[in-house]
Image 1 (cartoon, rainbow, N blue to C red):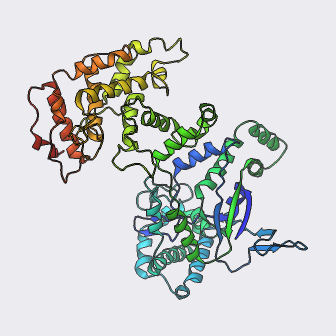
Image 2: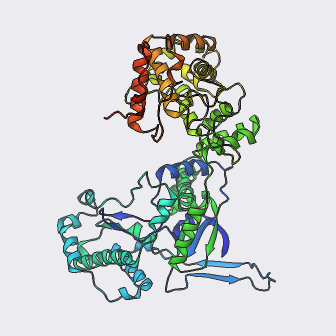
Length: 561
């Protein structure tokens, strides 16, 4: 293993990222990296754009199988080394693969696969595959490949696409184990394209052919393989490009071009100057099996911190002043700090109706607590005034109330004198009016409809597994229906002190026993889509005419679409 650091733009020149891609809906490459997540890269660009931000985890790389000694390590002479470590010079030779034609790159990938599986050498792609490939293209389409790829957009897919749902490391790791027949399939697809391009000769000079692009093939041929850390590398490279377009670097680039420098060379020089130096852990092994093993170990053994524990750590490990110093950096890095703070506040505040009733991610806590993300969804309804929908309906009543009645609410009447540009900016801030409204609302609901002390009661304020009210479905319905009531009555909120009266009016004639009955839910899932709609319908109809309680057998049913 060799430990060193290098500029991200330089790493990008000699390190390839073999990705698992689907071509034409049926064929897959032999790569083991998931495709790029553009949202994650954008977050990393923002992260790297702040000079104070450092990612300490090294990129995990390995040498690629090759017939040349392009990666060499020469120990320092006249230096006494320990039995465990030595210093020296690492040399990585990288040829300009971009200058090669797509046909040459495909030939090299084909040869590389034949080195891995010697039985492939001398074989030929099947006539059936060749006929199929020829049918999928035409001479006219090939001749115009250099200017448009629309002819292949439907059937072949764009190899640069990054599906948003490929995020789970377990799924990615499971996909890398392919038997030798799959390697043969990939070899045959490559070999078939080599055969066709050889037949076409000089009539084709494009960068992509039937879904196989130069960039994708180059990733299989670089002297170094990125086993883990592709998003960190790509984020750092894109960050250098982004910063080069901003002062003072944009002015420096412009002056270099005025002075006669080649624009592309000048751009690369500026990016190299800006680029982060990333730590690298390089495995000196050419064995693809070892590369995949390391990838699986990293992605399966590294356990991310859950959101509940993240919120607990962030909110309890830093002072307010310390939190202020890093809050913007965390938010720009894609970590929802304010959400974590809000949930942690209601979980830890003794005056909160959710005090000690929500998971915090600690191993010592009991497992019958309201999930962190459930409280988060309730917080969002009040803080962001979004998501106030009754299950089965499209109307967002929290959003409607925001658009129609927030501005006229006396609770934010002094927003301008407090320095806020809009009523919502005043309402939405971490310590804004929403927070006291949220707490007052749920305290009033709890005192009206729930039992705080008897943990065996069906309406116990706790124990989401057994309680009819203290669970995701019921709490969401109550929050959404409250905002629907405010919209129906055209009501704003004048002060926190008026919340109990608003709740009393909203629940007028509603019997406290609504949730305090056995609903016979053994063996059913409360959060099933059809059952959520059924509960929302039962509650909405009852609340508007609370003369008779719904039959308890109705709660087991699921509404059909």
